[in-house]
Length: 304
Image 1: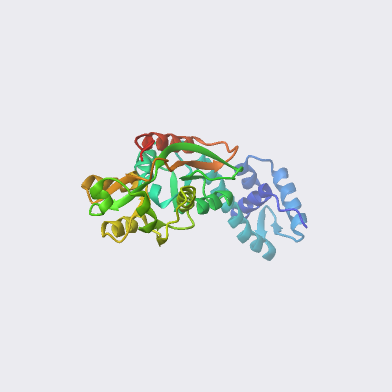
Image 2: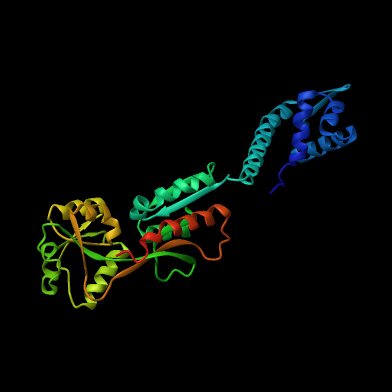
């Protein structure tokens, strides 16, 4: 495999092609005329063909030289663009932030955080990939995203978890449901309800199953829904009950269309946080984003 052509020789070749003069080329590149001549001889040796016709003090390109010039100009243009791009990354506020988040945090947490983030980093390119926690873990491990806002996973030694807040799952029922009227949950009635729950592939679904298994109960009728908004609307219509954290349904609870009731004497809690590769050195933008998330999530700490 041949070594790549020398970029300095290509740059000198392009200038020489434009000026047609060794003297002028040497002047523009702040080199000696003999240095330019040596570079061109080396370039011809590397390329394996004659590139220049020397006509007295002037220089003209051969057919091979004309062909090389087209490629050399493209190569040097790309190199200049790469250098400019890298220099921009070194300037304050320049760069990118690739985020991932569960649908819940994409709707309720990330938007106000990004508004504040853009004040400090207005020129940052930001992307946001929604998904459930297993999908976000996969995106992190494949280097498609830099940070993920999700539930705490188990058995992921390659990832580091920055805790943000802990919430507690409750029964969420329509205001007209008998449990809402009585303000209490009959334990014997729990297995007989129709449940409207988020995706069975989610960590939350597994936590709910494990919780009621330990309570020696099986939720017999489960309607799987892939949207939190759809889940809340179905519950409001009295088509079943759900199990959610009240902060996800805060608006509906405050307006009185939904009611939150504890699952039982034993709580079912989840930990939310930010994931990234373990040992990764966070840049200023990533550290700032994590700090803003911690501030934004303070009101959610231990929010049922």
